[in-house]
Length: 217
Ligand code: G3P
Image 1 (cartoon, protein in one colour):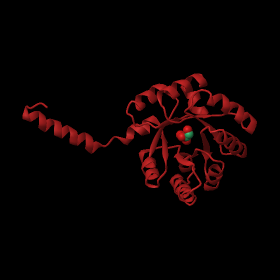
Image 2: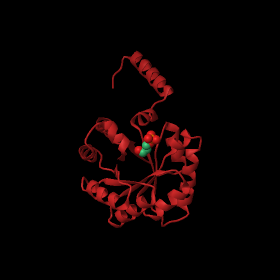
Image 3: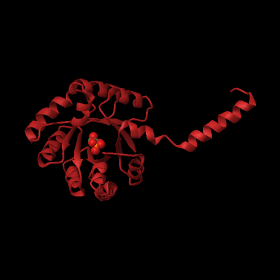
Image 4: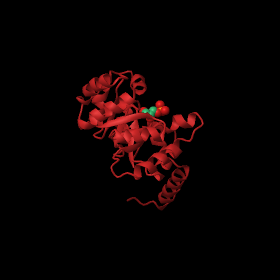
């Protein structure tokens, strides 16, 4: 499973990239606004910090505008993936970028029907938002199960399921159980993945017992 970091905070990204466990980054207009930085500048820094795919979202809603904006974003770095919303214009822009060998992340996916369209449009990634479905009383992970099952039926679907809107470590675990290709995870949740109180307790006991031996390695 690939781990992307879901943030535009360059310090968080650099910190987590140093673990060697980060395979890419996703941003969106809200995350960029939260960073308080110039969009193009922060994307340049992120693309330099992480060699994997870095999603940069267009803000136009028409096909022509998405293509114009996406072409500007694609010029920032080779690892830019253009993020477009799951709308008819977004799907048309997706096909354009796919035909021009530019990575595309089709975002704001909330149904299996939408995910089928994203695969047919040749998207590199489709981003189903599990947390936002959970937030409205629907089962976000059920959608991941459906999409993974559908995609496995067609060997000519090459779109990777990029689980987004992740709220907790169990979203990551369940997504992995279902064979989702990628999880894009907020830094706080990524850091939670490593934590377990029994690990801490066990390590403390090992070290205390070792200290009693008076030995050094
Ligand atoms: O960046 C896409 C997605 O991960 C955002 O999720 O619901 O936390 O805003 P959310």
